[in-house]
Amino acid sequence: MAKKRATAVRSKGRQAGSGDGRGNGSSPADGAVPVVGAREPCPCGSGRRYKACHGREAAHAVTELVRRPFEGLPGECDWIALRELVPAATVDLTLKGGLPEGVPAVTLGTVLPMAWPALRRDTGVVLLGLQNDAASGDISRDLADTLSRALTAEPGKPVESRRPAPDGPRLQDLLDLDAAFEPVVHSGFEFWLEEADAATGDVAASLERANQAAIPTVRLSGVDAAYWCETPEKNHLRWVMPHPEEELLDALARLHAAGASSLGEGTRLVGSFRAHGLLVPVWDLPVGMPADEVEKPAAAFGERLAETLGRGEPLTAEERRARSGLMNRQITLS
Image (tube, rainbow, N blue to C red; front, side, top):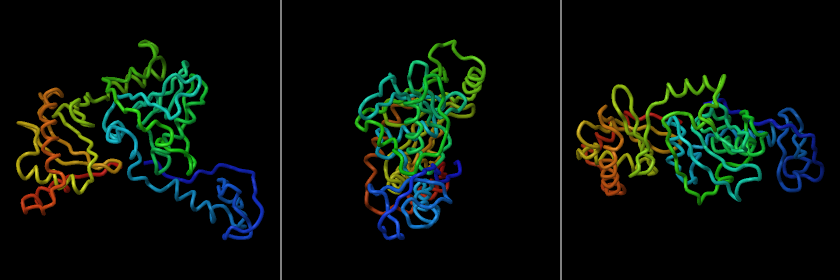
């Protein structure tokens, strides 16, 4: 993760008037205190430097880690998968209130050329990159700031990274929360280009490197946010699940102890990892098991899991051992 620091947006304004409980000055009429340089007098009029007054609140807001940055967005589990698991994918985004003039579409992409945070094509289409380093503790606020600037960027230009304002909008404020979130997984990064042969120079070199490094990945169609991938030694299924972690671990332990956690012959639930506040169970699959052969057993496992979730009786000794084993193999990505 990138280091998290408070935004320092210069402001020349000063406020004067009656006290606000912090000193002899006052807060602005609307109650908002502008962000200024750390060593400047605080605009609230307290007589203290900004960093020792309202700057503490601003710094805390921008550095505090948001455990579930995509919570409340449609497709939260897929947002996490595209951020952490999927090499090449796109999603058409729908903005609240519709698209601004001159922007025919907004597309989320896992990675953009040259690792740009965003770019606005010559046609006005905006591409927003998801797998970039976060400048604050809230990925949703970082992405919303980048998206806001991309919507007004000059066509044909990338958007540079910057720290967002601590009180700036989040994706939950900019996106239509009733619109579907439907990822399209690609075999390569040709979605960077509007024309198949348009890549030249650094972009062409970046495209070639990205395609060579991309792991073949498929999103299952029968269950939500489950992604098959192919590696030289074995294939895997990585499934982002929305359930509360403790409840999910209990259910997985019950199924594992009962010999019902696999996805068929030669498959094995090997553990899980935590990403952006949710748990992602992982299965090892035989090398020769393609994605379409995982669909039916994954759907059957989903039914078994749904029946097991929420069972209130204490775990048996065998189930506790299974749970301990799953937790010992658990890691946290974010």
